[in-house]
Image (cartoon, rainbow, N blue to C red; front, side, top):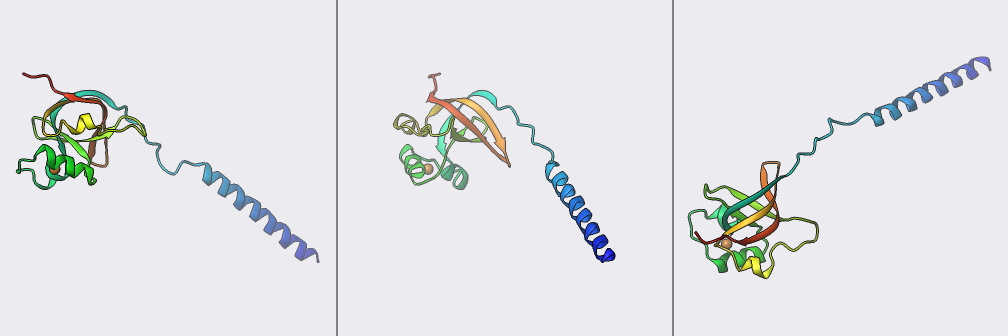
Length: 137
Ligand SMILES: [Cu+2]
């Protein structure tokens, strides 16, 4: 009887130690916490276009109507700067409409996008606070 009790006690102690270890392990961060990169405020000029044509047919001249159709059917809108760099255009806040009728009327025109530059996983975008027609030069 004495031997049985001792074994039970040992099991209990082991279980408590195991639980303590699990609790300890759970508290350790899984990986280094990501330091949130501060989004840079930008005002960028370029051509308002669609991602579909800009990526798949970069040498083809896209029209306003083409980009309107492309974005209507799911392609994101992009800003193409003077160097040909593409920036995904994103709403500046959750639930805010990016492609208003006014913005859709500016496809294939020079625009100024004001917002915050963001980047992750090889993709670069602008949280666009405003997209307006670029001043004539
Ligand atoms: Cu298009």
